[in-house]
View (cartoon, rainbow, N blue to C red):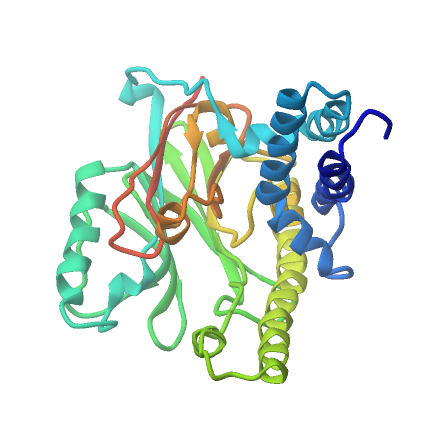
Length: 356
């Protein structure tokens, strides 16, 4: 490292391992966390590792040092993955309603039912947003069927609810000619299955809509609050960290298996597919890579900027998305939109899908 100052040598010593961590994070797409759950953490941290390497590129550019090429190489190797995080060429146009369908996916958090005082107004706002957007196909996760819930203008509906009337729902303006659910082959999470509905479009074409919610991270809020306690000892901090990491890794294991079940079902389906869901995993994950391998990510084709789908992430400017609309290559996506109204702990997403 001739020609470097002492400070620059320290920076390069930090640059190299961070560059390799970025390279390893690309492998999270291909490593099933069911067997190696730690790989999921690398993928989750992709935006952080990318940001740090971009910082080092800027640092070496200002310093006019050839060490810049190390981070540039690390970033370029994973350039295709960057398109899943950020887009600059959104596809927008006026859509012919006779040749397209408008799709919305929305995790509604049980319409906030009794979560706090005044929850009724938030529930009404969720209903108002959905009815104003007026999608042809609506997929809801964390759907809760209760007396007085928001009502939507759909003739057809398919849902799978547990004994507490909680689960998944597909609403459609098009006739549902077949419906069902597929059980996951692993226990864990609030959902034991995903659902699908076959819709008859324009009285001649049949498409299959899939709605899924994969295993949540499941962090204990009480433990998170406990970590902020100034009186907590170092030993207690380490113990609480273990309690946080364990459910995180367990969730990766479960999602790895769930993703495989979903992917197998998609591959076996002959009909054009529209997939909606809360995957609880970012684009740099095995879950995303496995499910999207047979489909088009509509954000990549028609989105712009960052598609942060969770208000908490958006608040802290974290470019993470875990909610998706994907489709068969027979569709052409336009007008991808994240509706940044935080009536739930997820933003609703819409897209227009034009078909031949």
